[in-house]
Image: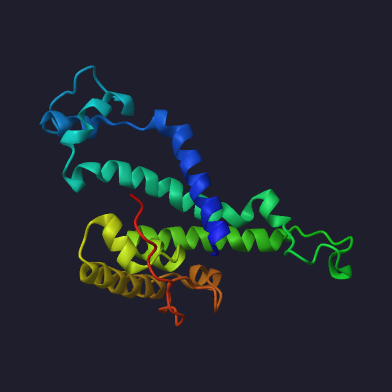
Length: 214
């Protein structure tokens, strides 16, 4: 995924999260902020809008307290990634410089029905495989192998040791390959040779981590 595509995906993720923020139940965050147990009722009852938690954000220092937000955002992120190339305006894109080529003259650039079905099946299988992974490892796998974010940058964002991040990535790849082997034959066939994500480490060197913005 090049820089322009990555920027487009991140924009789509942020917009989707913004539009659906009102649907996020922040009751667990509020319980942590107020020091309540899971059994205790939160003031005002549930569901709790995110705006109700804003005055207590400074008290949510433990990363575990933010797990509900991470899982919620992960759902948006994965959905946007898997459907990015299937959107109508993306399917009709023509590489720059080839618009006037005779190859594309009068040719319908939309994928055939069977191609769309295959893409949907692959996305469903990959969803299933990723769901089987430990969340901490899954995050590393998606951020590094799909979004092409350097390990050092991921470790910095997640506030973990770089060696820990490398270990999680290694284990995630091992778990993913093991999960592929457990698939039914018809599911495995959906992942055609050469299209299996995360199957092996990329041979190319990753780009260096960008400087952290202040």
